[in-house]
Image (cartoon, rainbow, N blue to C red; front, side, top):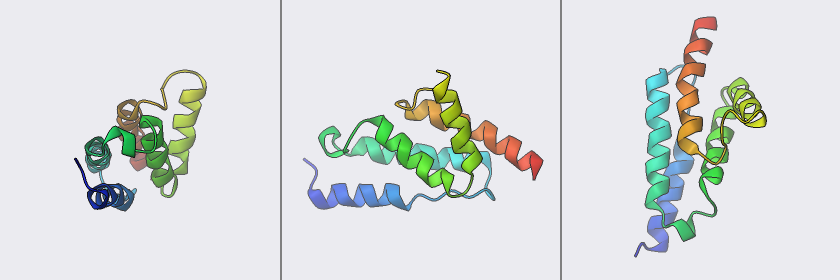
Length: 105
């Protein structure tokens, strides 16, 4: 069983993940996957919710650097094109948005 301090450390590592428009889409993808792997290591009963909680954490982080991406994801959710309970689906949308954003800069 995982100790409370180990769980706290994993949650802190998720909290410490940062995103920047100056890095490549591949780096964003790696950071998304790191967040997901850390979250999966936390016992389900200690995660404080399902994947929807992790998706909201991701969107909050990304909103700080690219609010248009968050608007895009929420629009896709509104029309049923993405499920905000599916972290991998949301994370996979990100590299395409990054490429479009870098082209427009």
